[in-house]
Length: 211
Image (cartoon, rainbow, N blue to C red; front, side):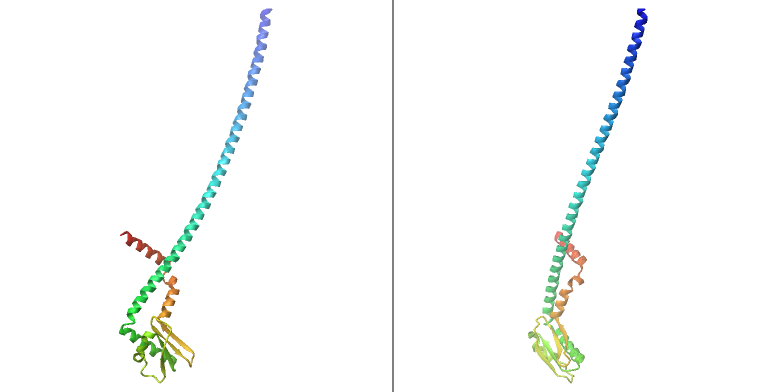
C-alpha cells in the first residue's frame, strides 16, 4: 500500500515539477523576447539618433563649405578686379612713355599733316585745328597746302598729342587726339584684356619670380 502511495506521490510531484519547468521556460522565453525587442528598439533609436546627428553635421559642413566657397569667389573677384586695374595702369603708362618718344619724331609731324588734310577734306569748309601747346610750332609744317578753305590753328586743352579739327559752319568735330584715344583704351580695358589674360599674366609673373 505504501508502495502505491509513493508511486502516486512521485507522479504527482513529477507532474508539478514538469509544469513548473514548462512554466519557467515560458517565462524565460517571454523575458528573452521582451529583452530582444527592447534591445532592438534601443538599437533602432540609437541608429536613428546617429543618423540624425550625421545629417545635422553634414548640413553644417555643407553650409560652412558653401560659405568658404562664396568667400573665396569674392576674394578672387576682388583680386581679379585689382589685377585688371594694375594691368590697365601699367599698359597706359607704357603707352604714354612710347608716345612721349613718338611725338618728338619726324613721323609724328607727318601724321599730324595727314590728319589735318583729311579733316579739311572731310569738312569741305573752313576748319579750326587744335593742337597741344607743345605742337603749335608745327602749325605751318602741317597746314594743308592745296585747299580753298581757311585753316586756323588754335591751342587745345589736351596734353598727350594728336589734334582736334572743328568745322564751325557745319558744327562738326573730328577728334584725333591721343588723349581721347587713351581714355577710350582705359574704358575698354576689361573688354580688350579679359580675366584669362589677367590670370595668365599673374601666373607668368609668379613663374618669373620663382625662377
